[in-house]
Length: 534
Image (cartoon, rainbow, N blue to C red):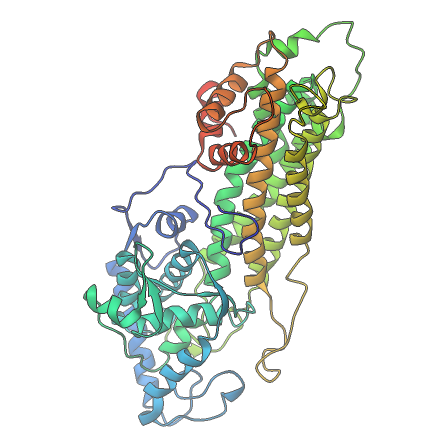
């Protein structure tokens, strides 16, 4: 994940098992998993088609070829597209029709989309081709698998998709590359043209036949790929949020009594129970916590940002799991129009509309904003002498001479403000297109693009909370932190300087803490003590 200010966000969380480039993902007639998407998109796994998929592709292609010679017009086979679907296209012009469709729809603009997103959308389009519901030829599907395995990534641009009829422009840029046209990047990032890349890798450019142009561009694969990656990353980051919350509660002399399982069971949301259990596990056996478990401690209740962390983090978890269920349903889908049914009919439909995916992409942006907002409030408490229970202002070494972590919180606040803007839903907007044929669109691609920025920012906000909590806890010396907390602080020390002391160049410390979040160090350190967090 890179700078929030950039529109190009390349998430690289390695908290789960990382697939090596030697890994092969087999694409069959059934659904891929989120883990499959991550393996191919992010970790360079190679791709192959199953024998069953190849047989089904060939079977449905025979249906399309039978219709191609029919005197009756069939949409996508012998007609124009969209608002031009009323024109019957003669056989001699159909190859040109397919080329024209892909070329004209390759109309993206703006910065390049990240490699992992393009690989995800190509994999998911291949998965739909493999169901046998699209009617493409076997050599076309094999070409997609070959590009993915060779690490050839078409250049796709930020703008161009309305999320209905699928991600048309992004998918068209990929289809263009399979045809041997347009720019691509090689596995090492080198920019070249598709014709050269395909030739150098022994891949024959595809000459599209009837129906294939539509089949390659008429899907929700871009927004779905970004959803799958976001679900993967948010599952990791919400565990990190539990760790950072636990460290803040500990360092701010808060109580862990409120996280007891019987209290959480009074409101039986599964995410809430999991989050509370994680916070308890991280705080277990903390001498800092035990130091104020006395009658002299007059505090009755902690602030909401401490006490209610399981309710917020838990609600976020449950929302992510709802989004995962939507992703799983979409991963099991064959999105195309028209579609070849199992009994051999070719039927028009509306399954390309991105609304189901667009809604949960927006939900997740709300989740990221709110979890980050609560983390920023906990950070602010550490820095305020009136509320941090005995710590120096801004955790500074010599307050007045030193500013401590004052401006780190400013950075958090700037990102949280951005997150709130990114939480404004894209899916409530619709701008009609195609001469009012496509008069309601999902804007799901836009929702996915802003979600990637949200996920990146959430990781950075949590990193600053961890940096702050680690310094605050160390200022409680000679009291020792919980074993899990101590392990996290040690892991942070390997990436950055979290020790208290005079002011220093702070940006590298923030980036180091972020690297520890993104690289999985924080979660691995905590779980080395607690066991797997929920």
